[in-house]
Length: 224
Image (cartoon, rainbow, N blue to C red; front, side):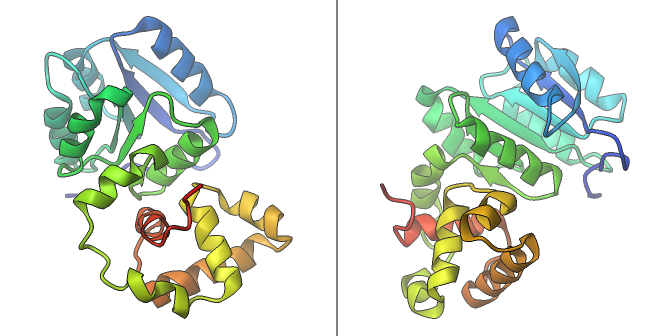
C-alpha cells in the first residue's frame, strides 16, 4: 500500500466532503477553504458519488459522515486505503454515534471527530492527518482509551521520566494544542518545542501525536 497523496508545494490540499446534509457540507467546505487549511473542496451527497470522485484522482483527503449510504463508511475507508497512493479518510459523527466510532477504531480510518468538536482541535487534527498521522477528537479519547488500554504499558511510570517542562508540553499535546500555540504559551521557539517532543516520544516510546494524546489522557493530565 503506497503512501497518501501530498499537496503540491504552494497549493492547498484537494479535499472531498461526503454528507447528506447540505448546510453542514456548506459550513465545513467554507471552514476548510479558509486559512489555515486553504483547501480546494469538492462535495458529494452519498458515498457512490464520493467514491466516483475519489477514484478520478487528485484527492488528498476525504471527510465522510459515519452513517454514510449506500456504501458504508467502513467500506469506503477500506477501499480508499487500498489505492496507491492511498486516500486517508476522516469520519465525522454525532455524539450518539459512539458505537460506530468505536467500531471504526479497528479500521484504517485516519481520523475520527464528532461534528461538535472544538474548531481549533479539529483544524489541528486535519493538519495531522494531512501530515500522514492519525487523529482522534479529545471528546472520543475516553472511548479510545477503553479500547486501547493495553497499548502503552509504560505510561504508569511516565511521570517520573519526564521533566516538569516535558509534562507541561505533554499536557498541551493532550489538549490538542499545536506547536505554535505551545511555543507561545511557554515563551520558547518552535524548534525547542519539537526538541522537547522528541525527548517525550523517546522516553515514553511513542510513535505519533495520537499516542501522545492517549498517554496524556491515561496519566490524567487532560482531566479538568
